[in-house]
Amino acid sequence: MSLTSTRFFSTAVLTAAALLTGCAAPKAYNYTAFKQAKPRSILVLPPVNESVDIKATYSLLSHSSKPLAEAGYYVLGSATVVEAQARLVDAQTGTLLWDGKATASSEEGRSNNNGLVGMLITAVVQQVISSATDQGHEIAGIARQRLLSVRAGNGILPGPRHLAYGQP
Image (cartoon, rainbow, N blue to C red; front, side, top):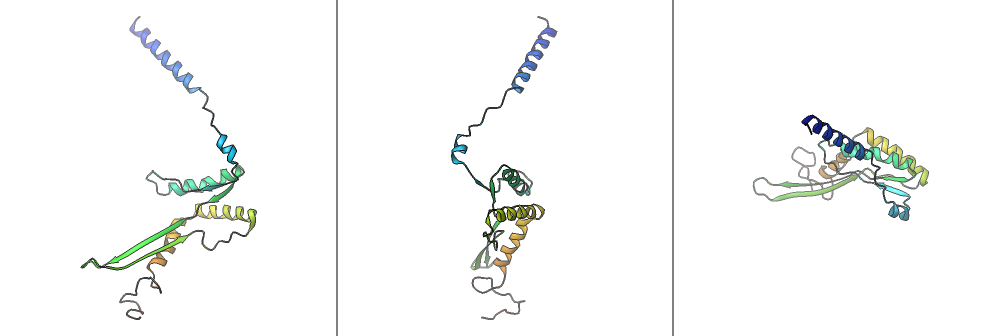
């Protein structure tokens, strides 16, 4: 066999192999457990983001509810929850002066007594609002306000430039 015919034969074999594997039917998925469970609603949780785009998680999350609802499922969107902790430490002595915790959630103040249709409409409206705004930033602001505001209980004490400084 000449070098030209060997190359032609090799190219023909590789092309045939590529065409045959490209036409293979995908393996059928086993839906046995899915059919036995008969899910009626699906809770959509934020996906794990391994990309450098910090908005990828919530972009995917905001696009996930619609196709599931159109497939006939009641979709429960996951809430945006921010938990914050802070400590104030004396830089000279290392003594812990204050520590606090606060949480905020996008689900606060929502009532769920609207029935199924009302819940579906509320979920769709909230999904649109969430995808149009940076909800995490807003919820983080609420948590920050709760954590760092001067308040009764375990809030940070007023500083020397506050009207209530030094008052019991």
